Amino acid sequence: MTTLETTRLTTESLSQTEERLRTRPAEHRVVTGDRPTGPLHLGHYIGTLANRVRLQNLGIPVTVIIADFQVITDRADTGPLRDRVRTLIAEYLAAGIDPERSVIFAHSGVPALNQLLLPFLSLVTDAELHRNPTVKAESLASRRSLSALLLTYPVHQAADILGLHGDVVPVGKDQLPHIELARVIARRFNGRYGRVFAEPEALLTTTPAVLGADGAKMSKTRGNTILLGAGEDETSAVIRSARTDSLRHITFDPVTRPQIANLLSIVAALTGRSPLEVAQEIGSGGAAVLKARTAEVINESLRDLRRRRRDLLADPAYLDGVLLDGTARAMEVAAGTLDQVRRAMDMDYFRGPRG
Ligand code: TRP
Image 1 (cartoon, helix red, strand yellow):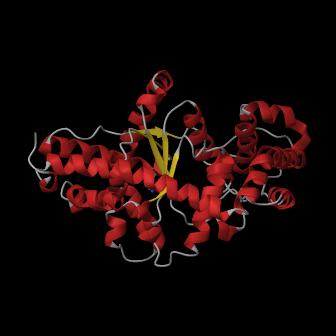
Image 2 (image 1 turned 60 degrees about the horizontal axis):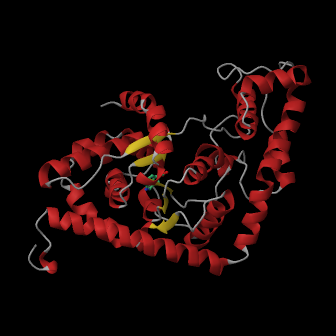
Image 3 (image 1 turned 180 degrees about the horizontal axis):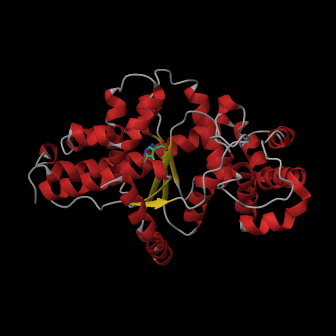
């Protein structure tokens, strides 16, 4: 299946999935995660964080994986990982992830997930892995030769998802090929050894990707990013420097006026309105008013989050405790899955004869 087909299928089933989640939240498990490559920014907040909190608050158990081993898929250096992981946890909690109801854990702390990797690797061919568009794109972007870790990255991710019995995976479009592969692996495993896994579904993020202040992808090196942890003045400065165009009247036109549309989309997403409405409201106020409004809305929306983030970062022992506790809970689930897998594969020698 091509990525496009996957995208269409997933989008079509989106409202049905939402409906099922709403009616029987406790029967589902959301598994999602991030690579701890740096602090989160506004794009993460609008695109994924807010949605995770929403799903959690619907009553669905949410498991968030800090995919630390995945950091080295496209780079050799892990960076200041311990700090990054702590910051990430603080940002999750500040955004509203509740450690009493949800699980936050580190991949490296759950060896059972890596053990699942071996049987899963036997279920995919190297041609399938080489065809994966996200692997190809990341490999090209890294300008390094393709490591076996990057090549098999979708399989590790399948182990994360299936190992934790995730049946709903909220992701951006770039991750769809991985979810598709997790479904293939679940299907093949069940076909070969008997039914153990449900086929997970992607829950595609519906908010458009937030661009940086210059209209390009948000990235730290471009200086166009609004970090969740940025101060209010810094945020206003980045928005003030945002590129716009020479047309005075503000209209929402993502194709011909992508930078203006980006600012409008940010305001819209954070205030729960449509970008068209916001554009009409600003109209002849022009770019200066739009920028002032955008900065104000961002700073207001993030004020509480930023305060909580600061407080949480001042208490690293608490953050470490949240991780330890979450990792213990994830370990229990994954060990259970590994037991099921061993049993299905007739490898459960250590448990004595089956009853
Ligand atoms: N690869 C994902 C990303 O870069 C992170 C991730 C790891 C993930 N394991 C996962 C996402 C399991 C969803 C489910 O964003």
